[in-house]
Image (cartoon, rainbow, N blue to C red; front, side, top):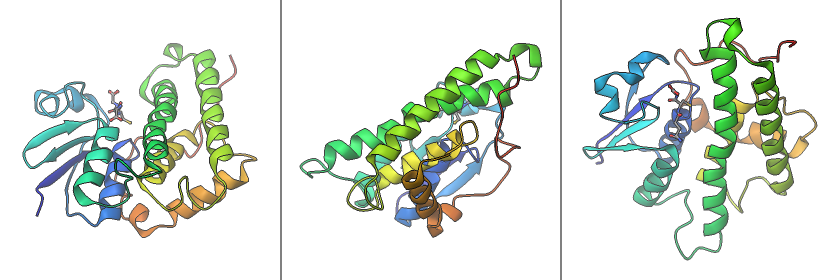
Length: 213
Ligand SMILES: N[C@@H](CCC(=O)N[C@@H](CS)C(=O)NCC(=O)O)C(=O)O
């Protein structure tokens, strides 16, 4: 059996790795960290030199970058990926990594609305631009969806992107994107999603409005 520890902050990108591990039915030790300066401590930096979650210990090796984790875990546990040679390989890689395009805008909004403590530090202009960029990513997902999932069947691409949407929707409403709304409901109705949720997370609000400039 694999020896796996996930270093996790609820409602962060580490959700997508925990959700995937739950989907794969892989036993994992979950170590929950607060979303604060402890991620910059020596212990954590030994796991991820940038001091970010997720960090994964897999058979004694420290691994960082959620996209790399998703690729490795799907290769290792043989499900929910699209291996080299699969006709959906390119699409799978694109959507797994597109999650990061969306997440970086959600992370910028998180920094503005949540991490910065004083109002004078926040920029409504940055908040507006980053929220609008989340909307563009949502449009790309809406345009992609023609069936139940991003590819022909459920895959780790749905896990990665749906988790990123779950962060992004706090800053840009899903709105009139019916295919994406139904797909997100389908993703979040999966038992493995529910099994990855819980604990004190990053967000205290369902939605963060941009304040007036
Ligand atoms: N590209 C990295 C990004 C990791 C990342 O920035 N994670 C955020 C949480 S979603 C974090 O740890 N932020 C803490 C900080 O920026 O100090 C990945 O996908 O793993």
